[in-house]
Length: 313
Length: 225
Image (cartoon, rainbow over all chains, first blue to last red):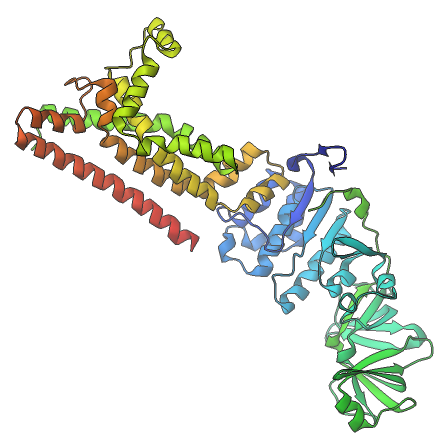
């Protein structure tokens, strides 16, 4: 227990050994990259070298933070925190300040940290995709209260979960890595019932490891005829089970395989009308491999968030 | 051109001002660092107290210092017992100029410390630094230009100190006479020409000091941008 306001106990921050990485990296502007990484560690220990290697910042050593890109700053901040051998890593929206393409390049580094250090991570984010990709256990906070707690996928299945919390990951399918095609830039994931989904390559995930693929409902393209000559790597025949209409928006539920949960495709009402979709329609669903996210299957590792006690950042 | 005696006065003035800065630099930095961390009534009171010499007549400050050092006060008795003479001695000049320029240093340093992002200091704490270490490894390195600019400004002020010096140290040629006192002295004796030469030298010194303070401050602004 680091902070217990009821008992009036408060461990001074320098003795907490919590490695903290804020949204804007918070590097010391008067120190070089190397001096920043060594700030807490003091000496070039093995841990420091390891952190520098894993985060691939060795070539940045002599530069000042003002000469770094946003992604480089975050990597240096992660190395600086790891170099002090913390007992807990507190990552406060570390990717929020980065643009989307950069975020996806940092995630593999975070996975490596998660897998190579046994340090528990407390990761604060508004991004469901990040939570899905990294977390073993999720605490969903709403207005300062814990709304739900559990493995990320189990949590997403919780009825009554707010739409925002669920946004963007309507289709969640369990599977395992079947193989990587390095040249083709795709990883094949085998779902229940043998369905193969091609996703843009995630070579850091070993073959046969259990994963979950997530597909946004708006990324599912619906066709009423078999499609050919399409760039999308994934095309599946399916049957429409139901259509839910909202204002300016229609959710089409489709059965792809009996073993799989129904897929959800989000279309405009105009598209539904033009295609003449109704329950029972035969359709083909197309998904680009870039539109499929891969997350660890639950529960990869349970981050003991309770260790942090009653403290609040 | 200044005479030999006048050059001696210039040197004496520079020496006491420099000595005064050496004394108030650590005190002023400590005072500013403490103020920068405080909020509320206590801070306002201290801030006002430190700033008093800026607005009080220097002669009033001189009187206060004289009283504090007189045999009527415990401090004065202790100094007398130790055989240390401050009033009407060069040490009195140092004390008077130091006290008068102290607020300028504190105010500049305070501004510089407040410009340092407190989250960086907090981060240093999470990386194992105690409050003092965080100050020396993060706050001071990020604020040193402001502190330096304040020191040079205080030095310039010290060069021209008159009122408190004349009250505490008197105007003793060859012993406590600074440039400001010498200018007054020469005009009293009707030596207007000499007074003008000394005023010219003073203006030149003050110009150089102020200009370097500005230059340091400008470099700071550029780096922050």
